[in-house]
Length: 434
Ligand code: LLP
Image 1: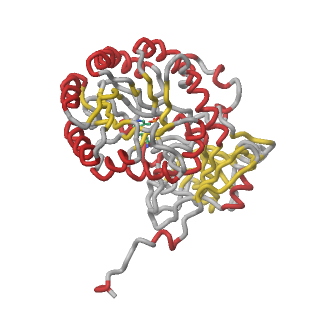
Image 2: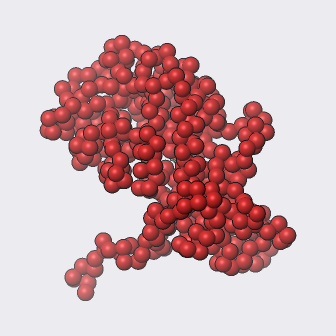
Image 3: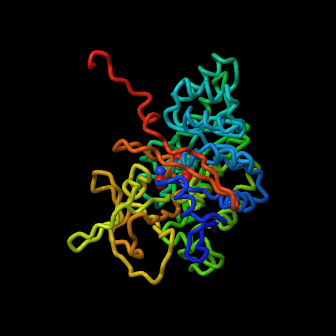
C-alpha cells in the first residue's frame, strides 16, 4: 500500500497534486510520502509482535535528512555504512545509539566516529576488522559492542549484483569459520560480543530464502547466547517491493487479488513466517530494511523535453537521466512510468523512454506503452524512493536532483536542487595551469 493515486486526471502524492510540485520546484525532483513511510514502518513493526524487535532503517536506501528525522520520530535506529551516514544521522537531529555500523571496509576514522557517537554495535565482516575495532576502542578507553556477520550461504534468488548471502560474495564470515571468529573476538580486551548478524540480499520476492537463512543460523545463535552471552540477532533487510504494478499495488484489494504463489512479500507474511522461528531464541531481533520502508514511498518527477519520432521507433526524451535514477541502467530494473496528467482519450504511444545523457545506456524503458505526451508535460517514475536519490551522480555535469516531502496536504522542499557553484566548489585549477 502507498499513497500515490489519481484524483480525477491528476496524479497525487497524499493530497498534493504532483504537477504543482513540478511547477514550483522544477524537475527532476524526488517526492516522498511521509504517510506511506509511517504505514510501512508500523505494518512491519506490528508484524513482529511478540518479539523484542528494533527496526534499523538501512539509510543507504535513502539518506535525506528529512526522512532520517521522520524515521527517528517513528522509533527507528539506522543501519549505517559510512562515516558520512553517521554524520547525516547526527545532522538530522537524530541519535546514533539505536544504530548499527556495517560494511566490509570500515576505516579507523569511521570506527572512532561510530564509537564517539555511541553506536549500538558494529557488524563485523572479517577478523582483521575485529583487531582494528579493538585497537580504536582501546585508544579511546571504551568498549566496542560487536556482532559478526555470518554468511549463511543461502541463495536469495534475486539480481546477481544485490545478492549477498552466498559463499562467493565478499560479505560475512562463512558459518563453518564463525565459531572460531567468535572465540577470537571474545579474547579482545576492548570488545564485547553482543550479537550475530545475517543479510542475504535485496529485493527478495519470496519468503523461503529468509526462512532458510534464519533456520540455518538460529541454532548457532542459541549456541552463541549460551557461550558468549549474546543478546541480539540481526536478520538484515531485503524485503522486496512491487515495481511492475506499482500504481495498482497502492489500492485496497490489489494484494488480496494476487494469486498466493506470486503475491509479493507482505510484512504480515514475513512476520508470520519468521516470528515463530525467532521467538524461542529469547534474543532481541534487529531488522535492517531499506527498500521496503521507502521504495514505494517515493517517485521521481521528470519533464518531457522532446518526442522524437525515429525510424520505426519513438523516443520520449526526458530531463531526467541515469545520473538521477541509475537502477534501470545498472540492474535492468523496471520502474512504472506514469503521466502526471492522465488523459485516457489520447492515443497510446509506444516509445523508448530515455534521458539526455550521451550514452545509449541512458534508457529507462524500451518500447514502453504510455499515453501520447508532449513537451512540458510531466511523468512520474514509481517506486523510486529507495536507491534513487542516494545513487544519483553528477555525470555529464548535471546537478543533483531536488527532493520534496509530503505530509497530507503539506509539502516542503527537503533538498534544494544543487546549483552549479556548489557542484564545482571543491575543484581548483592549479596555479601552474593558469
Ligand atoms: N543490511 C545490509 C547489510 C545491506 O547490505 C543492505 C543492502 C540492507 C540491509 C538493506 O537492504 P534492503 O532492505 O534495502 O533490500 N542499490 C541496489 C540495492 C543494494 C542493496 C545493498 N545492501 C538497488 O537499487 O536495487
